[in-house]
Length: 256
Image (cartoon, rainbow, N blue to C red):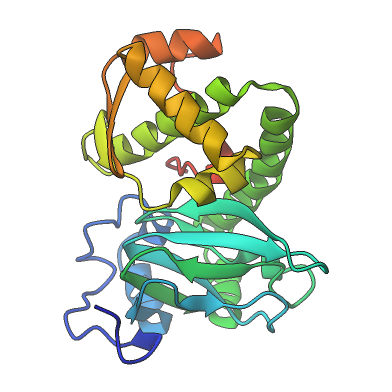
C-alpha cells in the first residue's frame, strides 16, 4: 500500500549507535563520543513509498543518503527521455555523493520498494569530516568506489557475455547480503527484470533466456523475484575470476 506522501517520518527510528546496520555505515568510521555528533545531524528513517523519488536529476545537491531498509535505484534520463539505470543500493549503503562536484545531483534516486532512508545534510557531514580524520578517509573511500565502479561497469558491459553479466550481478548481491549477515545463497531481488536488463545493457528477453539457461544447468533457481544460488563455485568458475567478484557500480560496501 502506498504512503499518503512520498516521504514521512518513522516514529520507530533509532540512534546510529543502536542501528543494526552501524557496522556497514558511517558509524564504522566514528568512535565513542563523536558518534553523538553524527546522531545530531542525521535526519533519520524517512519512509518512502515504492516509486517515490528520493531526489531528482539536476536538483540542487544538499544531502547524501543511506538506505535503512528497502532498496533504491539510481538512474539518469537522457535528453531524448531514455532512462539508464546506474546502480542499486541496499540497506547500509550510501548514495547521492555524485552531487558533490557540480552542486546538483547527476541522477535521480527512486525507492524500489517501501524504504526507510536516512538523510545526512552534506554541509554538516563536511564539517564533521574536517574535524574527524577517520570519517574523512571513509568518505574518500566511498567516492573512490564511485569512480572505480563506473570503470568496472564500463568494462563489464563492453566485454562480458550476457550470462557473465547476470552471474556477476547475482554473486555481488550474494556478497552484499552476506555482509549484512543474511543468506548469501537465497535472497529477493528488489529490482524488476526490466531494471536488471537496463542496468546490464541487455534486452529483457535476454535476461529471461539467461535465467532459464542457468536454471536448466542447475546453477540457480528463480521463483518470481526470489533467487537461490545452487552452486556458487560453479557460478564463480563461469567468470574465471577470484571467488568474490566486486562490481562496485552495484555498490558493494566494504569495511574501511
